[in-house]
Length: 257
Length: 257
Image (cartoon, rainbow over all chains, first blue to last red; front, side, top):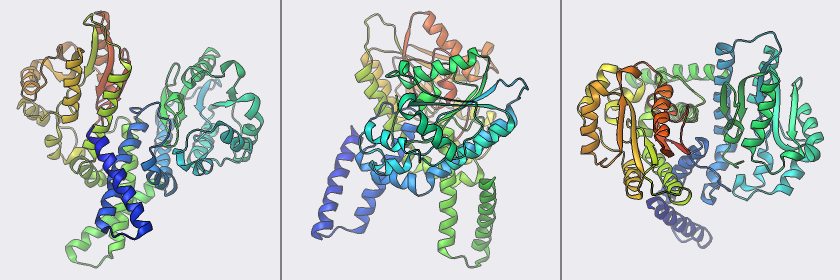
């Protein structure tokens, strides 16, 4: 309650500040700075809540966190967060994994905002402040122009070189986005993976946790040992057969149930 | 590797800066500011890595993050993070839990840095930059003077009022800290819980995940439904019978395996 009250006050002050800008009513710098710092502090708490899976099933980024999420995604902190996590994945691969020569050492990677970045698309959706737009996203993904996330491509190449069988598992529809996704992964340098699994019609409408658990169950049934599993959504990393280690990449722009 | 190189550079620059301070060799403000911002950015990534369970089994806070963690814990962001999470726990309790009248609706809370704060103690341990000191911690905990974490006490009272059976489960040793813990919880207003479970000798040396899973298994065996589980360590929230919802409170000062 206290926080809601504080936020309402903030929004009120923020709207005054807009008024100020257009009507040149004076507002002291310290007051503007105070408002910005308060919002940033709240949005940092919100982002931590999202990334730790304490805050779930959220539909959009809070409007007053637009500037914060934009800064986070565009000014380097997001990349640095991803780099540090991938450094720790590499340490795990180097120090804790014992590979066999039987071709059954498996690794799972999600596609959207794990291998391939949708940041350019979400820039046009106010970094997630706008609600999910299935048609718009489909158009974007159809183009096959998502750039690789550099740190993940670095991990990917390391995994392939080390002899892992890499499985890419995505909630994208096989029938409508299969070709574009294959093309996009190829043009970004994701070569030599074992299998790309897209969502078949039978899994349509299923939650990602259930669908991805099914896919992993089949892999384990085929004898694969899932050493690691990397995704930007907790639904990539929960459910059954999640793998020996899971790694959560940051994504404060959208939530997949 | 890139990050390690950057960090080494930072440490070098930071040591120059110390030199600067003591010998009054001139260093421009923008350079000092640059160094501080770089360190803060790394430490923010590190904290995110820790809180998402991507970084595990760490022994101490990185030395160059001392100032960052101190600021985080002492200047309000930690409290705001906790408050926001507890607000979301309250939403879950209000909106998603359906209580029965059979006295079997259970909730689990950890004790250290969940109900009771050890912040004053860790202030003397450079916020976790110093290694774990079992003797020092035992002396501190024996005094029974840990203050309640206000947001968690607020949740606690709500749970008791709503009719939950609240179970406090802690890794503290029953034989040596039982009395002090009972006393401390009482003097901080944690009244009316169903059971306080401390670590009996038979669980000595067991990992927290295994020990706490055992305790929860017994509760489920007694017929309790574990609606929620709140702790500051991932080892409170993993393993078996973790509960319908888990909530991770922040703790960048130490890691319990």
